[in-house]
Length: 165
Image (cartoon, rainbow, N blue to C red; front, top):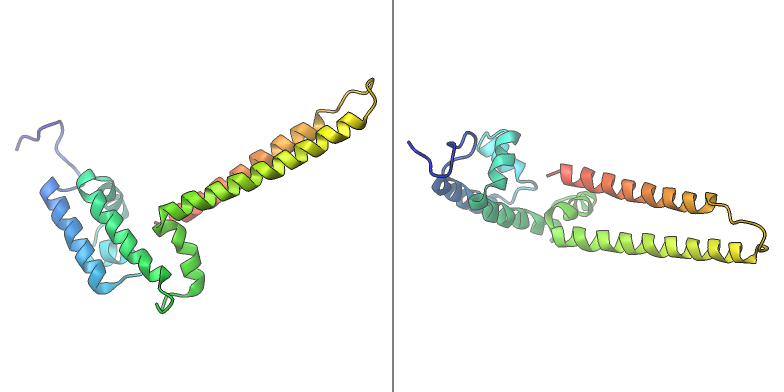
């Protein structure tokens, strides 16, 4: 069989099969209300993680993946669901990307305000020194180091959360 646009697929299925698989997944999620999509793709369908990663990136499947992800996520918002509260808080960032964006922006703003306040304090302290004394760069370097550490911690948290997918 000749495949237009290059090599034949090696891991995912045809566009029609991917759409059918996506529809099947969404319907299964609606009926079974799993706490994670891996229940469907590993237990129900026996797909590997590598296959799943390929599937969820296919343009014809991605819409269904996103829809199923949201359906699973609603259980984490439902106050009456059997999902433990600690898990609900942990997984909301996975299921609701708008929440991730908002929380990250909040953290970035907080870091910026803290850095601005520290910089103002440093500037004030330096302005009080006599003109013949040069301001040490150690305070500025420390501030930059703290900024880099906070950003690295935030990135590590995001990576850990996203790895749960």
